Image (cartoon, rainbow, N blue to C red):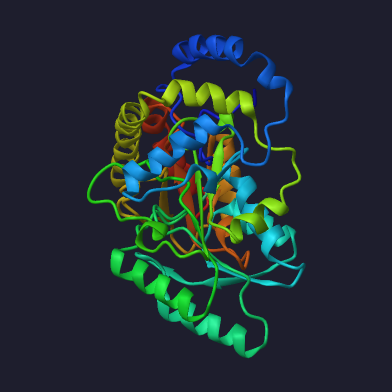
Length: 374
Ligand SMILES: Cc1ncc(COP(=O)(O)O)c(C=O)c1O
């Protein structure tokens, strides 16, 4: 296992204390005995039917829409879907993909690595800005190179933590339709919810066939199981599956997790969220106590991150160095920026460190920041 620094606030890992290792081990032994020869076969492109049925139920119970399990295909983590979208829907380097200007680092890097033209749309406290989206889609069309798709994090946006309100969701759907654009919704944090009303996902507001939905079990269960999925309808579903050449998703992981979560999905979410909320609160208190006069930050109602505005005079390289000396890591704002410029923000992750380490790490983070100021 990688050695993590004691105050690892950099990575979107989740709560180790609520991972049901012992109970899962019992389930795993029974599942392996039951599966037997099924593990000697390739899983096919959609993957384990039982987990697809459970994920259809998860979506139905959360979003209130019926999902056909035949319109779900499993992934080795939703990140595989992020890349698959681009490979299936783009022709090659230079193709424009529209996304939030501040966006999940995995997507920023994957699309950059494929040489795509990452067209960044500014975000505010409510997510992607619709005036800018409309303008960019129109600009691309006028240039004869319409966007291949719009990639959006409407719920618990990573890194900013924002929740797009319903009116803006509806506007986004209307804009996508007006421009005949494919909408790729990444709902990776779907069930990591702490308080307040939840907004419905985009596909629940509109079951358009040009809508693609990505979700995961990483954030509510464990990233190490590498289980995520896509929901899409034909003919888009077929386009995506035609690009899948990995011999299918992991049957063993899917079968074990399905057997474990089948009768306790929401019970598990409730337990995991209670622990995550307590960690979020501890980190928010730490920020208030140590950096209240220096920084401002988001108050996420779900997800795993706090987006912190730091003073302009902080030297970011020095901040990282000073942090490393004190065992603190954080994610630098520029990693999430499609333009890769330095920005005075950091993202703090609270899912994995213990409450004690969050408490003890905040003064260290503060000392590192102060040492890096001009
Ligand atoms: C927005 C978003 N999408 C996708 C992923 C990838 O998650 P996984 O591949 O573990 O499902 C992450 C992980 O941090 C994320 O934040």
